Image (cartoon, rainbow, N blue to C red; front, side, top):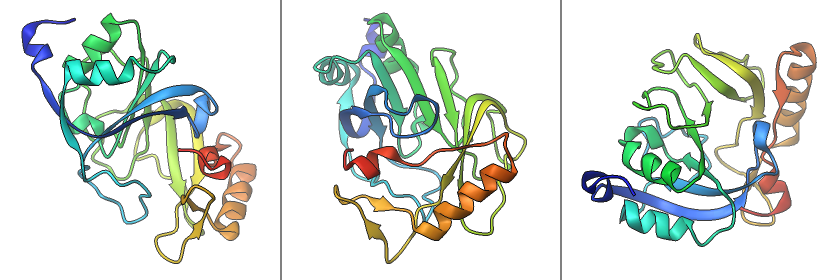
Length: 206
């Protein structure tokens, strides 16, 4: 699938796994998660290990993804758009997959192959100014800041604790009750937003 140059493209992949989307609009939907290594921000509240990884070709990634029955693939990280995603996205689209990307919005995709774009903006240096869904991580006392981003759907999620975390059944970090309650009240006062908790952590799945 794709041309020889695309087939020869290599990516550093942290992990590929099959689960349910735990957040926002597609919560509960089966999907294959393609996690790219590294991120340009490395936020202290990030709950994901994304630094390690293996170098994989387009063909190897496709072979790995093909073992799962879902036809929806979520590009995540880290920051997936630090990479040239066209070769792998093109190959997956040719194979009939629906493609999502989860990004901080600081890099442009460089193509229009993604069916769903989810942006979690962290600062004003956005290259993506409109997306399908905006996801804001909110801590106690904070206000949602979009930095000029517009979206079709808006979600608030409680910010992850950084230390002395509460641990879920799968070893995942759960938010504390006060932060969750703050986010609930924030959404009630700002009804253009919807609350999104990380359902996979509460279910004890990846």
